[in-house]
Image 1: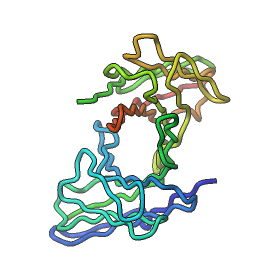
Image 2: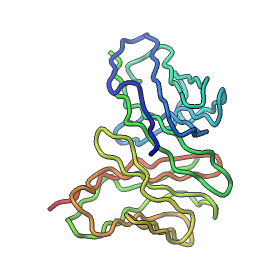
Image 3: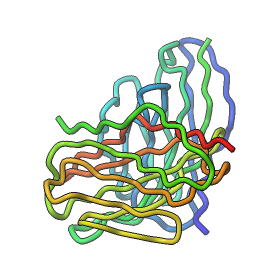
Image 4: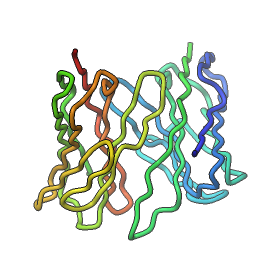
Length: 116
Length: 108
């Protein structure tokens, strides 16, 4: 069974801090994703990565960066946290997508981040 | 810009069939639609996926009409444990879009 583990369930940080959210998957998946989830807005893609050291911007990358130094680990970085980044953050992974298949994503249980 | 639209909420009773529709821009014949279920304090979990007409698995069916402007998740004979938020995900070429989610409440 695929397991996607996010390092913290709850996190409280202060405005201006640099924040790291960590995600690890154990199924050798090529794709990894970071989303934020807000009421009424569903899941919005921040960044995704299809290989080590590769990254692509999603819909809302401003204020965030990512790092993928190893295949199993994908980190989300808030360079200077602001109160409007208070949200639930979800990490996901999947096998590589091809023209013939679109493999489902496997999600972690999320990190609820509060910026004070 | 790709866009998906779902009803915000739905109510049902145990034993009924529930149909949740996701509306989206025209999608190509090989663009996938995927549905996820999410319980409180958990990440979304895959339910079903398809790209044409009808797909069925042990928990749900997915219907895609010929015009491909919508898709319908069908849950047969729901139980109280099906109370959750349901998300559709549509992938157009390299653009990926989740709906805002439908909160399904199953009543006894």
